[in-house]
Structure formats: C-alpha cells, structure tokens
Image (cartoon, rainbow, N blue to C red; front, side, top):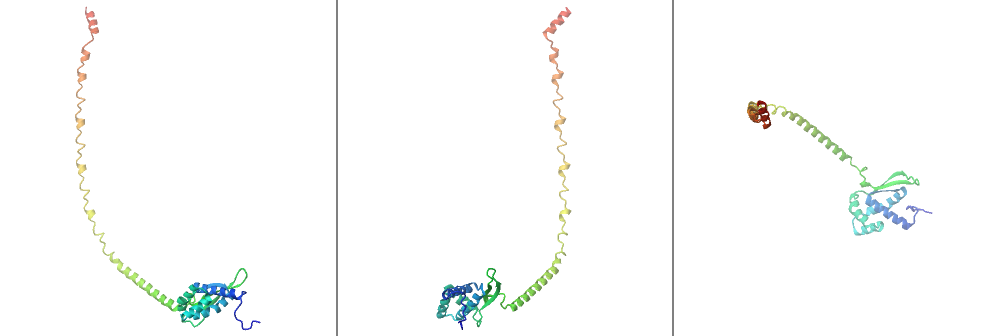
Length: 228
C-alpha cells in the first residue's frame, strides 16, 4: 500500500523521474513558464519551490544544494542572481498552474506552470495604469491649450499683407517704354540692291550689232553680180 507517499511516480522509475524534474526545473527558471501535462506540473511545483526558497540566502552551501537537484550551473546562476532578487519578498507560492484543456492526441490534461512574479498580465499594476491615464489626460489638455493658443496667435500674419502693398513691378513697365527696334527699321530703308540695276542699263551687246553689219563674202559676190 502507498500510505503517506505523496510524490507521484508519473509512470517512471526513480532515476528517470529525477532527471526529468531536473530538466523541467531548469527550463522553468530559464524561460519563466513552460507547458506540460497537469500531473507533471503538480510534481514540478513540489520539486522546484523548496529550491527557490533556498535561493533567498545566497551562500555556497545553498548553491551546492540547488546544483544537486538541478544539475545545471547556468540555471543555478540565474536562480540566485535574478529569480531570487525578484521573489525575495514573497513568502512561498512562487509558481502558478493554469489549466489549458485537453491534448488532441491522447486527451491528456494540459497545463502551464509559471513563476508568479514574471507574469505581467496578473501583476498588480492598476495604480500605475491610473497614473499614466492621468498623465495622458494632462498631456492631451496641454496639447489642446497649445493648439488653441496657436490658432489665436495665427491671424497676426493675415493682418499684415506685405505682399499686396508692394506692386512695384506693375507700376514700372520698363520693358514697354523701350520699343527701340520698332522705330528704327534700318533694314527697310536701305534697298541698295534694287535701286542700282547696273546690269539692266548696260545692254552693250544689243546696241552694237557689229556682226550683222559685216556680211559674208558670198553675200557680197551675189550683190556684185546683180549690179552688173
């Protein structure tokens, strides 16, 4: 009979169960929360909480005891440096078990075991949240007051239309008063080539038909014969 035997066997022998709990405890210290079956989570709670209580007093003896059960020097170092500092004020109850339902394969009860002080959802931060809300309201009021002040001070620019009072460019049309090129059509007044048709006034070849006045010798002979 198993009278006064609280430790669950978990379907494993002593050596297998001891190393399994050591690995699960090291993972819990490293990751701050793990998912496992409900029976293993309850067994891990009984295994890890006395070790966390030992970590509150940092001494060589307590470190050796923790290393005896965890068998992982990195987990022991993190337990004494970080976890013990954050859990120092809590008098027990360092872990929390949350049921997750049944596993789809074998319908086993699943659960999540976590360190209580590392859960941000369940941590007591309501007063801080209220203070932050008040600060946000103040900041919003400051923004509204600053925006209203800016809107009230903004029409000062509209009262001084400096751009409208300076149409200096329109009153001085300097470009329109200087049509110098149009009043001096120098190119039109000098048709020098048209007034001197030198080639047309010298038809020298036409007025001196020298070739027509000198008849050929055959023509002269014919004329002499007619006269005789």
